[in-house]
Length: 209
Ligand code: PMT
Image (cartoon, rainbow, N blue to C red; front, side, top):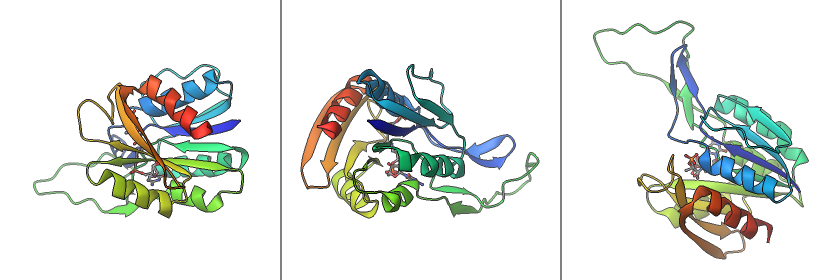
């Protein structure tokens, strides 16, 4: 099976030395890519800037920085995959006017105007063809189930892996995670707290079942 996975954060440029980003380390997405390779699948990994070694045995590794680059690469790769897993933490906003030179500080406050980035999952959900499976993640600090189910419907996902973030022992940057995997047919599976490597294997098993 041809599996496309995205992982890590995006960086949205403010000026040549500053950016807006988030706490994603890439560990969850890279673990999924490693687990998929270990099962013998043809895996393309699209990665934001992370400090992890590139998994061995990938079919393709594509490195991006911004949400715009992530959107372009994912839309290019999606038509030729059977399964896409969207684990990346894509920035929802970017500066409207990124500066060409380092901004100088002034006396007063600074206001940055931000604009929405493309919702890549939403775009892929619209492109999805029969036979393709689209899996999203939901990173939530509250109302996990309600928000995850709403994202699954809106973005045309077949599954959504909902994880609680903002806790020290799971979610962003931790070595461990726990998710509830919701299926579009209304069923769900709880996958309890364990290493992201172990969890990735269990998640794939559930998705490919
Ligand atoms: O990288 P780690 O440190 O290991 O942390 C793992 C993780 C917490 C980042 C991961 O498990 C996770 O939850 N990834 C999704 C993070 C996220 O952006 O969730 P969201 O609820 O904001 O977005 C919902 C879905 O839409 C996600 O599949 C996301 O990839 C996608 N999305 C969001 C915004 C956007 N502009 N484009 C998108 O495709």
